[in-house]
Image (cartoon, one colour):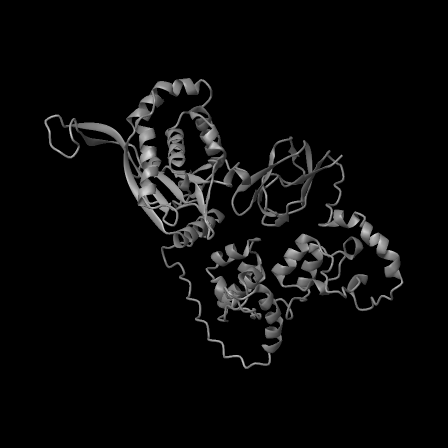
Length: 529
């Protein structure tokens, strides 16, 4: 019997994914567990393994397709077996009986129905309710700018499918007339989100939206704006009326009553002439000896999150020099013991344990800022930044897997978790949940030789600790008062590192941030042997 290939669990809130590439083709023999394809979401790339062994009978979606979480990607069966057609999106729902509707059917049958002008015999929605359409069909309709009411449904019970929407879009039944054809480089753009498309074409979403909320923008709006800019047209879409915002002392009920009246009065009032928006700056084109390298999904995600954090959080960074002789001596004494248990005892594990000491000393460093107050986290999920391989142009990526409940782990457990997450990150095998719910982050830029950086906070966290390169430095060791000369002072060459702690100044001040660093320093310099 044929086996369907579906997406693995991508985590809470992830409803779809983009197919990055297929590693097999139709007719290939596969074993259970073999990787069939790679898919991508906004945060993580995931491999899809074969749920069973056999022959890959059919591939239902191509590379670049945006697929629903419940879509059937492919079918595996015995050689020569006929692959059943993949069920249409929402077909399973349509086949389920609806008790409430069944009971009401006789009453509905007594009422005259006018179906002469409704496509495919669908009944008009007199009460303004949404037409019957699968979730994917609704999303594609929004992307293409297609009115669902004008689309004939070919699914069970007249349900509109994704194919119906695409067929109508091709036929020109889009909002406001025919869908404007896009240039070739836009027509073949893979299914990206609105924000990622805007970043891809360097467009300002506020300019495109005009008076509309950003949440109302669709992919088609962004792609049309990109096409319009190429032809010298304004990069805006038709604005919609927006009700006035509520003032602090204005009841919501009064605003709700005022909005419809304002909407009716708006056409009658003379509207001031809209100020012309400045034309988008021409994009630089590569000259002789230059090459345009398109942004990867990873680079776009890093740019988006770091820019948002840098411009929305008041960053302050404090530096602390730390003598790491104690942890290096402990690692040398116990490295073989850990290796016998299959664990590579890295310096990172010591720093995570020291971070826990700092978070317990200053709980506000393990928190989230809100307008109502500071949410203190009484659990410790420590993220660790992992650099991904660099390409030929010197461009790489960064991902932050999270060690969940790190406070429950000893040094061995922490080292094992560090090993596993780092290995899975480099092999592109992280799950969505591996990147979620972090409460504090460690970044070890010292592995590349850097002494000091000013790391950017991973929101909604309030702190990130950076670790510089460990190197021998000349340090004055005092036998008397530290700031007074005495004959007992001498120079020692000690392994030192510099910590860079960036913190959210809305939550932590200089004194509390330094108290956190002091606890980290004390844990590292006085590590029990």
